[in-house]
Amino acid sequence: MPDTPLDPVVEKRLRGIRLARRIYAPRTLGLLIGGLCIGSALHELPTPPWVWTLWALQILFWSHLAYWRARYHASPYHAERWNLGADSLLGGFWTAAMHFNVLPSVVVLTMISLDNIAVGGIRMLLRGFALLAAGAAIGMWVIVPGFPNVVPSSTVLLCSLPMIIIYPLAIGYITYLQARKLNRQKTTLMELSRADGLTGLFNRRFWEGQVATHLPTDSPATIALLDLDHFKRINDEHGHGIGDQTLRTLAALLRQSFGDDVLLGRYGGEEFGLLMPSTTLEQAMARLQHFQQRLGRYPPPPPLLRMPTCSIGVAAKSPLMMNHEQWLLQADQALYAAKHAGRNRICVDGVPTSQTTLDLG
Image (cartoon, rainbow, N blue to C red; front, top):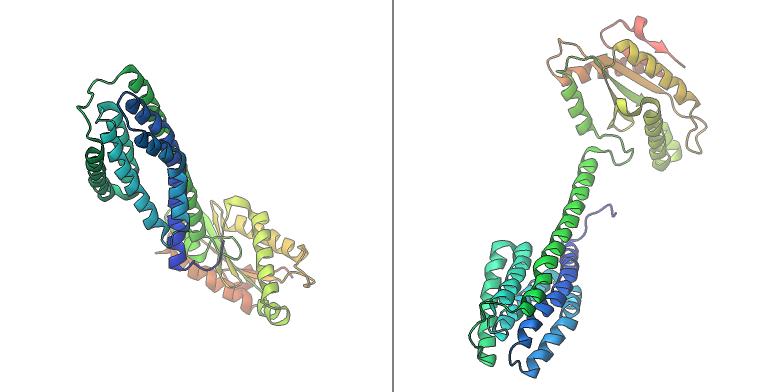
């Protein structure tokens, strides 16, 4: 997937091509089974040879010609709307050619209207009705139909059934596939909206939202802000590419160490946030100490010889906190204390540093 959005003109053209591709299969199916329905009615009438020729040519070539025209048109979307208009015009013509035989005429007009409303809503439906009427007028002018057959023959009835049964099922299945695709796209967009592009962890906005959600709950919870020590040296000495690999490596280790029960987010730059639901301060400290020990042994991305150390500020949830910003501020102050005390430490806000600063170096 490209990192930059497509040009609006290109994106509009691609949408039109996708529309033409979606319509191609049902149009081909509709011409085959609709042609059977129309042909059964024409067979019972004194139909001129040129009408049969037009009938055969439309069944064999029209869907392919319509797709080709839209595919290579300067504006595929408008070309496909024109194709749907042609479908309506031809549908009106065939109702007149069938002498307005009630059953096949209603079937053909209904299925064409279904296509129109699915693509363009009520406005497209009304446009389709106008073109159907125009096509019927042309048919009446060149064919001069007789009185419509209200009760269909058994042949016309049987030949109309595939259009009545198969075509709506096909449209329903195509709609189902499209709905599934849209749902997957929605899920992907939702994941992208809450994920950090570099590390795959939650982004700051979403992670802070989770912190705010957990503040009013009754169960204990602890947050930690983790910052890589001297990370700027890596970028300065080895380049930002190695720095990015280091951040991804740290994110992978965080996932391995804490699993799905801890919400991990990239708080900004080389700083990460950990939200530990249902976790007391003592439990959080033990897990964080174990993580720092693993970090010292974890293989770094080349050409680094070892992973950088990290400083961590920890804050447990308190009923005295008015909002989640206060909770984050306490963790941030604890992180600052860990940095100020010499880095590679864990500090807890609200308790003297001499009692809670752990030198794990």
